[in-house]
Length: 315
DNA sequence: GACTCGTGGAC
DNA sequence: TGTCCAAGAGT
Image (cartoon, rainbow, N blue to C red; front, side, top):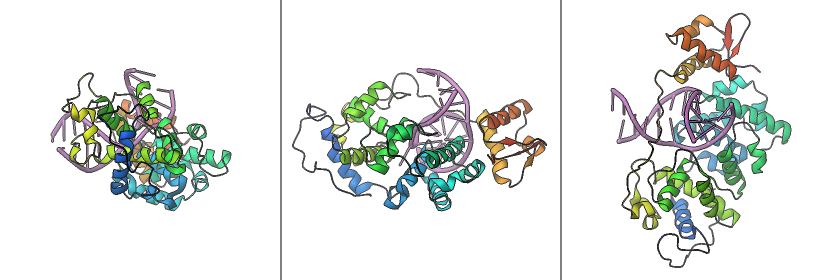
């Protein structure tokens, strides 16, 4: 999977600088990036053929806002325990939350379980390849639908994640960072840059994402290793610093999220219903503590029992 | 659009 | 040490 068929771009004719090719937008970028990918793609388990569409889908859920290094061990355990969607669908949702461990954003575990149930009920147990059908599954948005269709089934979709957005912002728009939220202009650009050929488009999607992850990183980018440095608008402009509205940072200490995390950690580690008193120990402020617990219950991550006990959801 | 939702590593 | 960041989705 790491080095399938090479695209028919091997010898691109000499071109002028930056995007002057009106016939094929981005054609001056495709070949170098894909060739770089041929040599530098990481050997990740979800890229191996035996991963299948289910493996790709599980990896995409886990990789939403979580680094590869932390996903790897959980992914392996997950696929060993639930090798098919129907296997996960047969489990209690709380088991998915427990197996999720400390990946963060545990609602993703619940949604992945829900997606497995839907796949089992509506799609005969097979991960759909159609973008609209993928989009209809819980926890799958625009990015993940495109990623699964492209990576697992070789379909032609613009796969616009934070890595690709940063690569395009720099190489094409000449700015350090993309906007905070994905814009219509970015989607239009991503579609325009998508190679016509389906297999090449899928390869391009994975390659441009990998370039952002390994070379064109948010901080300490290494342009000396970049296959398109010579054409990069940002580098050619002298790599100007980001201006405009500040990129919103995330605070964490003292937030409800931190309290929710502490509460859920207790329930994950317990294999029997937990009394209220055990949950009360994780946070000093009773108001915030109650709000966080209510939120977990409302989200379906925690199941309250009639006798004042709590556990991960059985249904 | 703005906001919420976990966790840990790097600098 | 605190800030920033990581293959987003849902409301």
